[in-house]
Image (cartoon, rainbow, N blue to C red; front, side, top):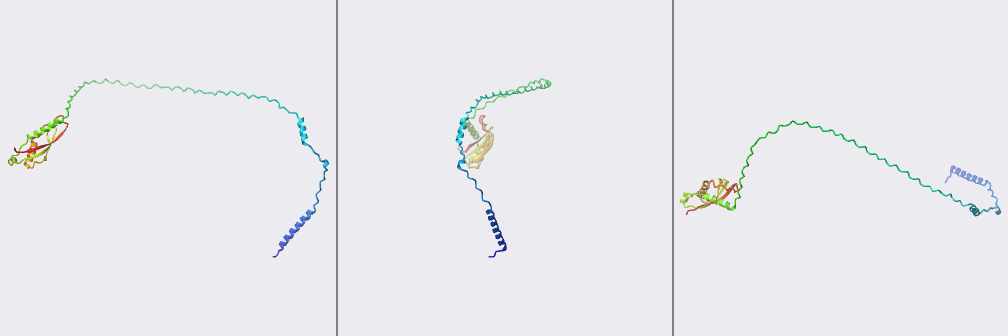
Length: 226
């Protein structure tokens, strides 16, 4: 390990500084001792005796009587001033303009009009009863039976048959429709049945108290030799 010159100079400087400080401390003078005081010269003072004398010598001080101070009377509060509202001025009502008088109209002319006499009310007929209905239908069958004619050719050939006719009539009895509901089985007898209904037109009119506007009925037609 090598020591440089700079390191040796620094160590020498530190050693010289320590040596100078020690020499300065040794050169300082020794401190002087304080003279000792003999025990006889020490003064002793009692604080208790002093406090006792001062308490006996002092006289009690009585405080002066305090005067009772009356609180001041509250001043009366001023009454609030209420301002009355001024009355509103009355509205001025202007008179309404009067309408101008209308010109007088001439009095209406009175025309004598004849009062029509009320029409006589026809009495309403009573509704048709079941008995009256049956009687009217029997009248139609009898009316048709009067118009029946046996064909001569069928009579010679001893041809018989039975059929049914469907007939529709209006209130006046006029035929509106005719048809064979059931054929007789012979062309001559079928034709004779239709011709019979045509000869019976018109049938007796329907009764007034019958509410029906049309009547459709079926009539049996019999062609038989005695």
